[in-house]
Image (tube, rainbow, N blue to C red; front, top):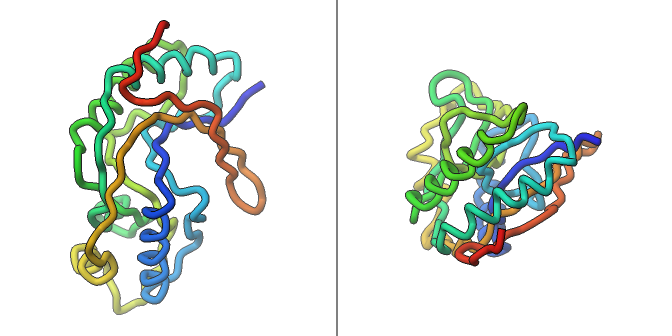
Length: 195
């Protein structure tokens, strides 16, 4: 049986509340085809796509190996961004600051583990850490996306920070009412493994 999977970091409740307030502010400036549901907010490390569920035990081992190498670290919300960076935006997101080096190392080490699997269709585009808040934003005609200005207007201080303490394997089920993301497995950072 095939499951749609991704590897990500949880976003804690207080940070989600902050993002919700920012999202409400932005909704006054633009419409979007789809606003990211708050219960689905996460920080993707690798999107794997459709994977044979027989691979899940090996993926869990990969996550455990990487999480044993990385120590807990802090991140915080920082700024607005969009994909693509030039032209009409398809995705509006929030970028991060803090220990980005540890986050990048985590992504890189996971990628090296995933490369060991044959026919694993994971996304290999350059990594830009972000939390998606809207898809296909529709701007009013007089507005562009002055994202630096938006960061000042819609992201009040203090911006919340949190400690990253684990890596989670999620299943994503696509339903008519929207995707449902279910955590399948979490490995805590800095814990030695017997694998």
